[in-house]
Length: 203
Image (cartoon, rainbow, N blue to C red; front, side, top):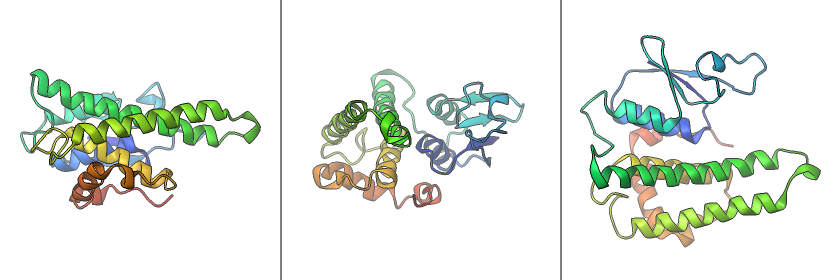
């Protein structure tokens, strides 16, 4: 398998962590989707990473689709509950985390536009989404060891990628002081080898 990736993408990081946790052999290939000569659309017509190219040459895209597929490939370290309410809860955590990333990346991209073209109202709206999502994660985690209780799952990986991206792109936000439960979880996550190996380069 080959993963088309970007070193700073939190969605790519989520997939990479799953690959490592599942002990799946894979190759990484950086694909700058903004390059004029990028070939990403040969595999993903939407021009986005992550994109997983399987051994038979077919492609899977969208991180949520990819990680669900990867979890079926090995019995090692199952990360997604198989069915029922627990599965839905884990996927809801992932959706909440990915939605937080959507809002945060929207801010990053908006701030890259010329100042005269930026929308302060739109930026503020995205910050509001981020704040509400972090508050929900903090409350949902509570005193539990992990997002889903006692077991490490995809939910923790997804949340960990959000918190890592906060540190990378939003260092001015002191999320730790207002979200002690998330800080406690993050301290456990960042010492896992999968998180160490996928840490993004400094901004």
